[in-house]
Length: 154
Image (cartoon, rainbow, N blue to C red; front, side):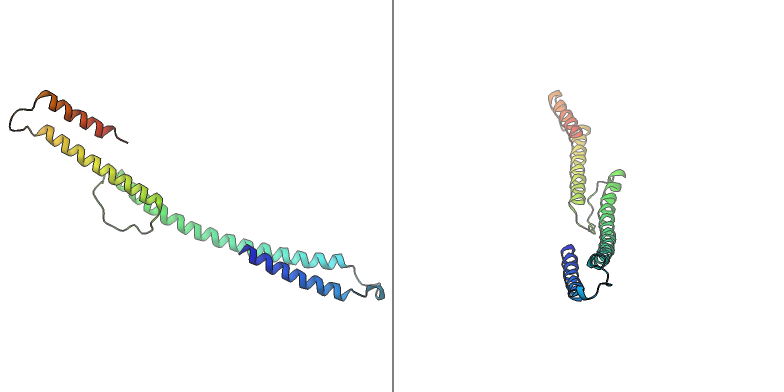
């Protein structure tokens, strides 16, 4: 877009500078005419003003679009984090409104945590439920170490 604005500005300046030069080509015959520099500066000022307004409008549009994008991503991300904050690690099959790597990473982390909690629940269940014959001390220690390992994972 910037290149287009610049190309249009240069084309306009070329045509206007050519017209000003043509109008003042035989300046020797009209001593009371103003110089070329003020006319060139007037046209240049007009182009700079129009380009500034166009760039400001483009920046406002880009800011608005970026804000919409950011709200979508952060909305989904915060939704995933609120599930974790509520300790809700159940699998959720709701669709993510806007797929973004940040949201996908948060969802993958939540799924890993859910798997870790499920594995820990299984290990604790094995500790609580005695087998048909009494478990040996080494098996109990192995299961306790496994629980500790599951709790310490990142």
